[in-house]
Image (cartoon, rainbow, N blue to C red; front, side, top):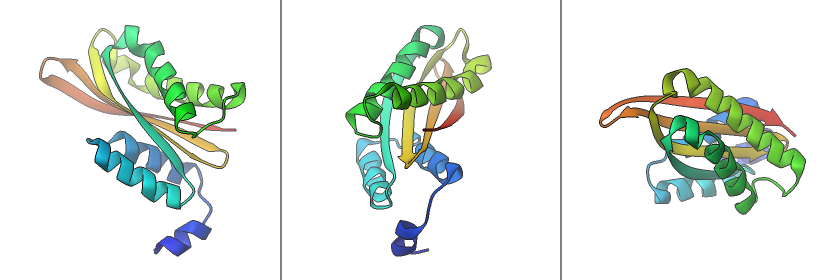
Length: 144
């Protein structure tokens, strides 16, 4: 499918979740910026933010980081409804990872994507101790 067809096509929760996952899986800022530009051409706003630390103590920091990054990059407006949507989707993504991560260190990247009223948050995690890591992705979605 060419870019002109993508521009005229409406996107739903599946496509926006896919964009959030792609942004969360980027390993370098240059790759992240390239994806952001491609998504923006299609009308999808995205942002990514890194995180790391012990899971329990990082839980609220990860939510805050997702909300702050989303506002900073104009993915969401500075209001309770949109901040709450990102916070809720981030909490949902974190809850999917919780059974694997409690008591361990985590590190990775948050990806947030938005198209019109769809907001998706994907969190890519490395979970574990030293070099003995498990990897996982949590995903949340909200409509505003």
